[in-house]
Every structure is written in C-alpha cells, then in structure tokens.
Amino acid sequence: MQRFRISHFLLLYFAAHMLQIGFPSDGSMIFDEAHYVPASLDTLMGIAANAEHPPLPKIIGALGIAVFGNNWFGWRFPVVLMQVIALYLFYLIGKRLLGHLWAFGATAILAFDPVFFIHGGALLIDMPSFLFGFLAIELYMRRRYGWSATSMGLAFLSREMSIFYFAALAIYHFFTNRQQLRPALKLGLLFTLIALLIFGSLLWFYDLAYKPPISTSVTDIVSQQVLIGGNGTAVSTALVTSQSISQQVIWNPIQHLLFIYNYHGPNGIVLNASYEPYQYAWNWILPVDPFNVPTYYRVDVTVTTGSITQDYAPIWYAAQPNLSLWYGFWPAIAGLVYAIARKKEESATAVLILSGIILNFAPWVALSLLVRRIGFNYYMIWTLPFIALGLAFTWKLLPARYGKIALAVNVLVSLAFFLWFFPVRPLLYSP
Image (cartoon, rainbow, N blue to C red; front, side, top):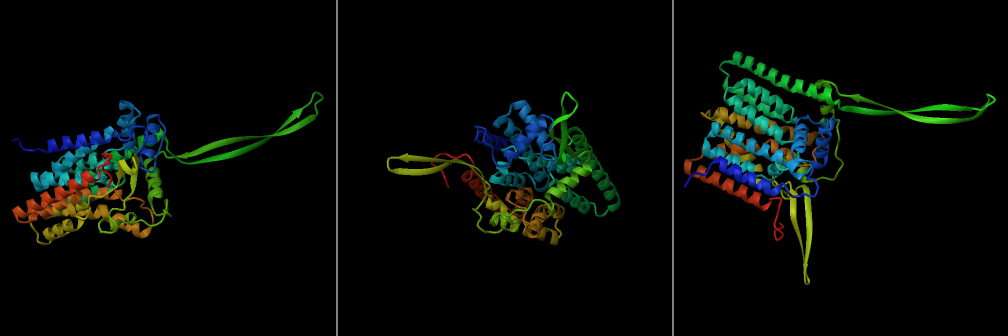
C-alpha cells in the first residue's frame, strides 16, 4: 500500500473545506465577513476601507470577487487555497526541524483545530499573513534571505501580528549565529531593511492610490439671499444652507501605522460587555469553562414529528478550541525548556519554537491585564502553529515507542474535536 503522504492529507483537508464553504450560500456572512466582504468590494471599486488593518487581505479578497464573483465561492475559495498552501509550508518547516513523522503530526494537530479551520474557510484577514509568514521562515531555512525578507514584508502588509513571527525568527537567527555576531547582525539589519522596504513602499503605494480617510468634517455654510423687486427694493430674504465636506486622509505609511496603533492601542475601542471567560488570554490555556465559546454563525431548525419537537443546528460556526492543542501549551513549554536547559542538540529548534509561543501569546496576556480590548478567543491562532510544533518536539523527546504513541493520541484527539465541532452538521447531530 502506498504511504499516506502530506499531499493526500492536504487534498482531504481541501475537500473538507469544499464541503464547508457553501454553507451559508444565501448571501449570509460568517462572523467578520460582514466587515471584510464590503471592504473587499470597496477595494475592488477603488474605495479605501478598513484602514485599521494592513490592506493586502482586502486586495486578495477583491481579486477573489473579481475572478469568481460576488458570492460565497468568490469570498471563501481564495482563503481556502491560502490555508492549504500555508499548511504545506508549515509541514516543510516542521520536517526541516523535526523530521517527516513529527512534522506530519504537528500539521494534522494544527489543521484539526476548529478555530484555525474556520479562519481558513471564510473571507477573514488572517490567512495571508500565515502564508507569507511561513514562507519567510521556510525561505530563511533555505538561506534564501532576500526572498525570505520580501515574504516577511508581505506578511507585515497582511496582518499586524506578523511582527511576532519576525521577532521569533530574529531570536533564532541570533541564537544560531551567536558565535559570529557581527555578520549575523549585518545580515539581520539587511533582512529588516528589505522587509520594511517591501512593506513600506507597497503600503505607501496603496495610501497614495486609495487615500484612506482619517476623519471627515462637515461644515454648514449659511448665506442670506435677498429678493429684489422691480422697483429695486428688497421684497424678501431667505436663508440658504449648504454643506462643505472635507477629509483628512492617510497619504504615507507612517501616518497609516500611527492610525493602526491608535485604533488598536490602549486608547482605542474598549469593551463594556459583561465578562466572558474566553475574553481573557490566560483562560485560553486553562480549563475555565472551555466550551463556552463565541458563535460566529448559526442556523437553527425545529422539526416536529407528531408530538415530538426537536431543535437542531445544521450550520454552526463555533470558535471551539481543540483542547488537546490549546492546553498542549503546557507540555510543549515543558519539553522546550527541558531541551534548552540540558543544551541538547535540538536547543536551536527549541529556541525558535519557544520564542514563537511566548512572543505570540504574551501580548494578549498583557492586553487582557491592561485594557478590555479582547472580545474573542481567535487571537490564539497566532500561537497555535508553535504549540503544535512544540507538542511534536516534546513527544519526540520521549523514548521512540512512547513518543509515537503520544503523537498518535494527540492527532486522534484533535481529529475528534475537528469532527465533533465541524461547522456543517447533519440534522441529527447537534452537540
């Protein structure tokens, strides 16, 4: 029997998305598609929209609509393609760091997370930065530093959180080159310069072309008109009101970055809603009401047969974590710290993965402590790839037989979560 390959897995995963993306197909939108579909349409028409985020995902969304139409397929299919490619790149990174078996397991664990799956099957703005972030890391590992920096610049143009992937890669770069810091610093500065040049020049081009508004002011102008009779005397007067509309627009990347910071920073929007456990980052990795999660989109159906009435949810997009991955934070941290402390051969890999976990999770903890800005739990998806790698790394540290068993159990539990919380459900299935 031919060996089951990563290509086979990704084809099955693609098929699962093909089943999912048609629901809903009546024009209804999943979660923040309500923002990003209109933003993509505006982008297609040359109108600036959603300037609080970098523009590349909206440009990709606009291209999807232009090619496939303004419908559910045009909205979601490009995102599916990006997620499948991103998972392949993730596998390549894992294979380089850990080997085929462990990389395959880590890829499956990540792919089977319901939240990660949903964000790869709707017109949301996360997948481009995963795609270009993973590509940047893989190209760096191949010593294609110029192309890696270019890809990292595109990741910056996709999502603000890409900066933490850059930081993790920088830590890895200096750790692995700690014996030759001067050339490492030179390469690091050149890499950063290229990434910022790609990001800044493309953002500047976008700002000049679209002129995103920072603020709009409306001024009422009141004038008096006097009606003159035939004998040259005033007959009556009338007040005429007109409006003058002016906009302050973004025209350079510095302005745009400041606008993004002011929107998302401590002085931005603050939530006043009642407390929910999933709104605090530490609860994402602690067993605190783990099945109380946000619903992105849901359809309820009531079926009455004789005197029996039953309620079902044939479509239910719930941001339910795969707990074997999210709570895998702890064994992953333990294995990585152990490897670094014992100075094993795998210490460089452990430094990269541990840096990725800390850098992508700690900001949300800090934000949870400082201000009420987090309304959902999906921000954890930025940490999940590194936790998946960390779990595979930890299981690999065990004696061979037990490590493979632990990895297999981890994958099977993840698959169970994926199937149980798959967003498109048979009518007789409503957990």
